[in-house]
Length: 577
Image (tube, rainbow, N blue to C red):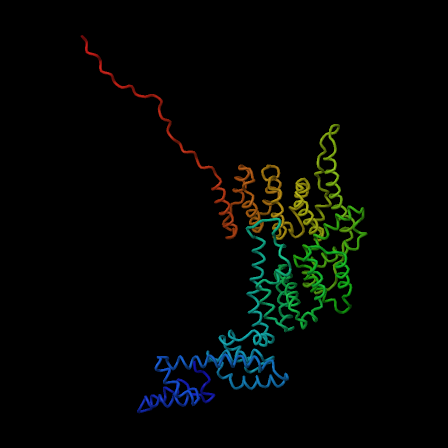
């Protein structure tokens, strides 16, 4: 409580104890101690007895004076930090720190010492080490001081950042497994600016401030974790952090990050959920502008393009562009915009391999993707349009035309062997589901059982698919539809992949009232958790069971049918005469 006062020659509690222990007249000793160590204002001597008459303790008076002086001193320190020439102001603060630092452990004075350090761009190394060595002091110091400690202590900075990164990933996963299933409000609904206001991004932005070294450390943490876990949410954080610093106009960092302008342009596309012609040209200019000797920038660019929000925008733009090409009778190979979208998708999907191998080259585009796969998807669009027109024609002279239900073998093979084709194929299936195109959905669904790296069983695709399936709610009453969707797709992976199990249960919790009772009963049995199942699966299953129990009709009360035969009253026999 009195730490450091002795070093400044100020009497403390120990001095008072010493005085009272060695004196003959304690009251006189206390009076002398008060006179020597009280507030040294002559006018105060007559005022203090007046306070005594009002029953105000001296401690209360001195405390209020102390608090007032401390506030004035804090204001003065903040003012000094802004006054006069840079060298002069920092010299004053350094002198003040030198005089006051011995009191840093004294709770009442500590805020002043911390305020002085906060306004110093470079706190003396010796004092930083003393702060770092004391947990309570380290906790109490301002983030401006902590930055100076962190920039030379990567391990300590890592300890501070690690819980935030875990929290960020957990928040993303919670959204993907949210109990709310909707086609309108999904994982990709929040705007980039809204996402950047999240707690973790804001905290990291504050921790970094304008310190390029700390920014580079965070990027290195994100690269390392992305490599270790393959979790693409770290790529989202990479982009969000840069754009958060951009929002605050931290030019010290934005001007030195070579990805800044590219990310800024891509951020605008993500906001619109579409890459228009003008921005496509800008993005291409940035990619083509990577100079020889600076190829390492491609690693960071690929990580930014691997962000699920970027992939979502590029894939949606590809599907939309493909539909435009159908209308224009143009092949994908003849469209520079389509080729750029594929180039960026390829760069994003190859991020992990590039950073892992440290070979910074753009992945080679597979010609068949452009010459065979995309034209095949376009033929599906044409098939649908033709079928819809046929359905509207008068049918007096012709029988009903069946929907083309066979999948080209090449389509299934592309989804299994080509990552970009698989990504585009999945987004095409999401597109037809959103259009309520049941025929096209059931036709292509079997191709999803086996895809490149099991992308069709990834959380993002299943999150979007379950949302879009709510538009086909009425189809869940049909046995054929449920068999194709559940038995032939979802249940093929449930036992091996817990995330699939969770997504199926989420879907049924939302649409169970649409499913035929017999089918629902068999699904309930098939989805029963095993001993190895996690708590999340068990919790969802219990919720589903409770809902289904509530839906069961209550057994009719069995009441005994009252007998219609009424007993006849006994009539006495008349006496014989």
